[in-house]
Image (cartoon, rainbow, N blue to C red; front, side):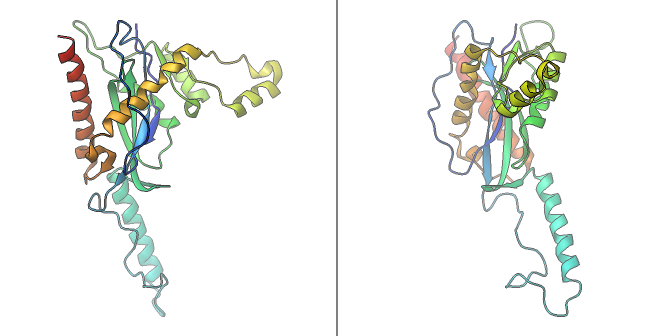
Length: 253
């Protein structure tokens, strides 16, 4: 039982969208038994969440006015307020400027199961358990399924904490080991432990999450974040995901 999800792979929907072919998600008999997760970054538009780079008391040349003893303290207060506003809006400054990051998990057909929205500079690996914990897959009877059979993720999610989390939940980890982790294990010899298990056939299906994000980015309001509040932006994500599910349900009835 289980949709092996490459969960927690997060990314950023950059303004202007990304490259690649969305592809077609499979809907065959093995749908629901495997999956992937990933992400993409949403750059904040100019009229979106208001987090300006300047601060009160800044001069045209960027320095403090002569004799203004309080200008440094005023700028520090302004920076703290600006960071607090950005945190509440789940905006962060990464290489592409202000952005939000979407962490998602999808099933084997590339249909989204859960989303987590964080500031753009947030790391992917620490959000791995959080996005998996949000899976709720209802069936015709009984409790919703919350445990996928396996999780496929790229090397960014290879960590002892994530592998221990998957073992604790009895989920198969399909995550390649990083080269530095391999070297460290081999250097320790027998004390380094055994090599991690890895199924290359299951890992090939990790691309479903990338195809899912290509479909999400066809909505301009998701490829570029125009919403001021994170709740509004997340509502758009869930609406897009619902439409993807409805297309599958209507095509199979």
